[in-house]
Image (cartoon, rainbow, N blue to C red):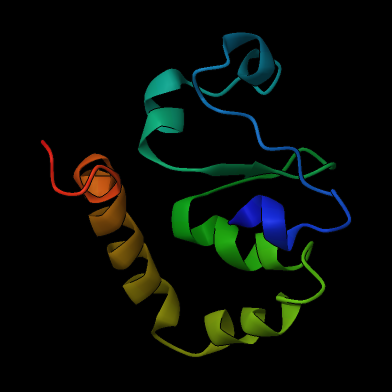
Length: 98
Protein backbone atom coordinates (compact mmCIF):
# COMPACT_ATOMS: atom_id res chain seq x y z
CA UNK A 1 0.00 0.00 0.00
CA UNK A 2 2.80 2.40 0.89
CA UNK A 3 4.46 1.89 -2.49
CA UNK A 4 1.25 2.84 -4.29
CA UNK A 5 0.96 6.01 -2.17
CA UNK A 6 4.60 6.98 -2.84
CA UNK A 7 4.15 8.09 -6.44
CA UNK A 8 7.31 10.21 -6.36
CA UNK A 9 9.36 7.22 -5.11
CA UNK A 10 10.78 9.19 -2.19
CA UNK A 11 10.73 6.23 0.20
CA UNK A 12 12.96 3.17 -0.07
CA UNK A 13 11.24 0.11 1.38
CA UNK A 14 13.74 -2.41 2.72
CA UNK A 15 12.46 -5.66 4.24
CA UNK A 16 14.05 -6.36 7.62
CA UNK A 17 15.11 -9.77 6.26
CA UNK A 18 17.45 -7.98 3.81
CA UNK A 19 20.56 -8.04 6.00
CA UNK A 20 22.70 -6.14 3.53
CA UNK A 21 20.05 -3.45 3.14
CA UNK A 22 19.42 -2.98 6.85
CA UNK A 23 23.01 -3.32 8.11
CA UNK A 24 23.87 0.22 7.09
CA UNK A 25 21.35 1.62 9.56
CA UNK A 26 22.80 -0.17 12.59
CA UNK A 27 19.42 -1.30 13.90
CA UNK A 28 19.05 -4.58 15.77
CA UNK A 29 17.12 -7.36 14.07
CA UNK A 30 14.64 -7.85 16.96
CA UNK A 31 13.68 -4.17 16.75
CA UNK A 32 13.31 -4.36 12.98
CA UNK A 33 11.16 -7.48 13.27
CA UNK A 34 8.91 -5.84 15.87
CA UNK A 35 8.06 -2.61 14.03
CA UNK A 36 8.61 -0.65 10.87
CA UNK A 37 11.39 1.90 11.09
CA UNK A 38 11.73 5.15 9.23
CA UNK A 39 15.27 6.45 8.86
CA UNK A 40 15.32 10.05 7.70
CA UNK A 41 18.10 11.51 5.56
CA UNK A 42 19.45 13.36 8.62
CA UNK A 43 19.82 10.04 10.49
CA UNK A 44 16.85 10.36 12.84
CA UNK A 45 14.99 7.09 13.37
CA UNK A 46 11.30 6.66 14.12
CA UNK A 47 9.68 3.30 14.82
CA UNK A 48 6.16 1.91 14.83
CA UNK A 49 3.34 4.40 15.29
CA UNK A 50 5.86 7.19 15.89
CA UNK A 51 7.03 6.75 12.29
CA UNK A 52 3.59 7.28 10.78
CA UNK A 53 3.29 11.10 11.05
CA UNK A 54 6.87 11.49 9.85
CA UNK A 55 6.21 9.13 6.97
CA UNK A 56 3.10 11.08 5.96
CA UNK A 57 5.31 14.15 5.36
CA UNK A 58 6.83 12.28 2.41
CA UNK A 59 3.46 11.44 0.88
CA UNK A 60 1.95 14.63 -0.58
CA UNK A 61 -1.53 13.16 -1.04
CA UNK A 62 -1.60 11.79 2.53
CA UNK A 63 0.25 14.62 4.31
CA UNK A 64 -3.02 16.09 5.57
CA UNK A 65 -3.50 13.02 7.80
CA UNK A 66 -0.52 14.06 9.89
CA UNK A 67 -2.58 16.59 11.84
CA UNK A 68 -4.33 13.69 13.58
CA UNK A 69 -1.14 12.94 15.51
CA UNK A 70 -1.13 16.43 17.01
CA UNK A 71 -4.50 15.82 18.69
CA UNK A 72 -3.94 15.14 22.41
CA UNK A 73 -4.17 11.44 23.22
CA UNK A 74 -3.86 10.18 19.65
CA UNK A 75 -0.20 9.11 19.83
CA UNK A 76 -0.61 6.85 22.89
CA UNK A 77 -3.66 5.21 21.31
CA UNK A 78 -1.86 4.87 17.97
CA UNK A 79 1.08 3.19 19.73
CA UNK A 80 -1.24 0.67 21.42
CA UNK A 81 -3.10 -0.07 18.18
CA UNK A 82 0.17 -0.39 16.26
CA UNK A 83 1.59 -2.78 18.86
CA UNK A 84 -1.61 -4.86 18.85
CA UNK A 85 -1.62 -5.19 15.06
CA UNK A 86 2.15 -5.79 14.85
CA UNK A 87 1.95 -8.62 17.39
CA UNK A 88 -0.78 -10.27 15.33
CA UNK A 89 0.29 -9.35 11.81
CA UNK A 90 1.22 -12.91 10.84
CA UNK A 91 -2.23 -14.29 11.59
CA UNK A 92 -3.96 -11.19 10.19
CA UNK A 93 -2.10 -11.38 6.88
CA UNK A 94 -2.53 -15.12 6.50
CA UNK A 95 -6.23 -15.07 7.22
CA UNK A 96 -6.07 -16.34 10.77
CA UNK A 97 -3.36 -19.00 10.56
CA UNK A 98 -1.05 -19.15 13.55
